[in-house]
Length: 117
Image (cartoon, rainbow, N blue to C red; front, side, top):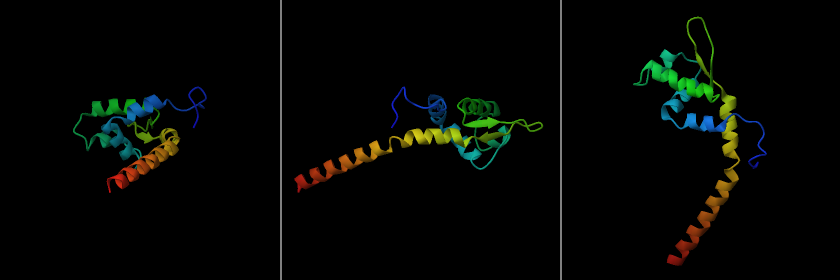
């Protein structure tokens, strides 16, 4: 695991995780995993206005999770997988820690169970 101050260039993970904290934005990303979509197409399943969806898209775009192109009259949104991959990579660095912690917890629980018997 890399230490703070020694981290190679990455997307702004604070912005990425802040964007991912909202369930509507996560749903939008899930929709975009199926392919590009316009604001109207993205807004269809939600009970929120198109301007609200546009605000969510701006947050996702600033975080680098999507890009928006100009295609004649529409501005379709497209998922940018490399930014999501950077967030997953950062989380993966903690996998060994989590596994070790869970193994230690398992050992403690087994010992507690044995002392009860």
